[in-house]
Structures are given as structure tokens and as C-alpha cells.
Image (cartoon, rainbow, N blue to C red; front, top):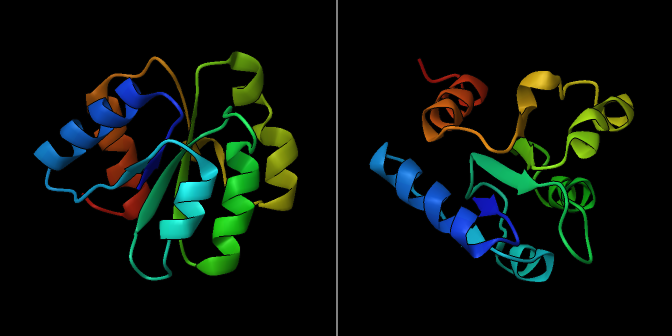
Length: 121
């Protein structure tokens, strides 16, 4: 699952990941994401950190209540949000730097990152 308020980013992630064998649903807002999200359906959610209404961090907290086993990768275009993982990591020590990506990022690096998080080699 990819959640990003930029439609072009959603399309790029979807096309690239599907070309690499992943099944991908994309959403552009937190409300629709929470409405569609179901435990056990997704292996990983890619969340943009800076979105209107609800941050990626806040959305992650809500998703974790639905599926405690969901894996996550946060993305952001803003360096200050990228560096904010230290604060968020105190609440979720399992989320190390490997779970964050700074845009722009090459799609090859995205695929590598997802494979790393999912344990696919």
C-alpha cells in the first residue's frame, strides 16, 4: 500500500512496484486509507510523512491499531521531517533509519528498500 497526497507519486510507486511483482493499492488521503485498510491484507505500507490533515506518523499509529504486524516505510521530501524520525523512533524503537526514505529517491532504491524491509533477497 502506498499513501501519498501527490497523485503523481502514487502512480510512479504503483507502476514501478507492480513491474517488480508487487500488488499495490494507492491512496491519497488518510480517510480513504483507513476506510480500505484491513489487517493481514498488506505486507507493507509506504507512508508520506507530510500530508494534509493527518501526518504519516499519525496514520501509522492508527494503522498499527488495526494490524500490529504491518511493516512501514516512511517517505518525505522535507529534510526536517526526515530527521524527525529520532523523536518518533522513541515511541517505536524498531523503526530504524532503514524505514525512512528522503525524496527524491530512485525507484531502484525504493525497490531495494522494500525488499530489505520485507526480508526479500
